[in-house]
Length: 138
Image (cartoon, rainbow, N blue to C red):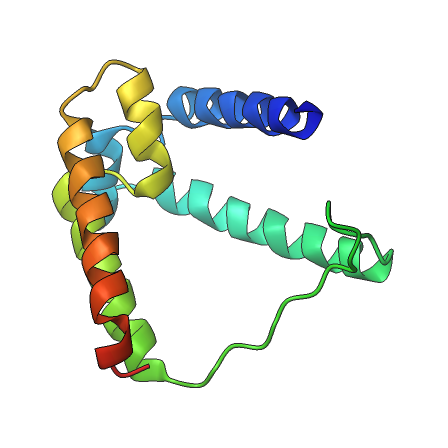
């Protein structure tokens, strides 16, 4: 229960940061996809840069995960096509809905209840993928 509370509080903090930085704003996302503003690229780029630096520090200091195993990043399979297709589908969904998966829940918390339709569609898409997974080229 203690771990749950810790992650719950971090999630609330993350939601506040995303709202205050306007990263969940549909208008900011629209500007990003039209290449009209650097705002979202700056947020995403700084998050990637911070993640890389923290991962390198964690690996160098041999930090462990919450399960007690050493932190490691598994190698990715080669397959440029699937990453392009998957990324394109993700990007189209993001552009059409105005939110990626994390901020969808944050937007519901801010009172954008129409986002519940997007969450239902995302869950339905995940369910369909689970059914078709064995038939898809991986």
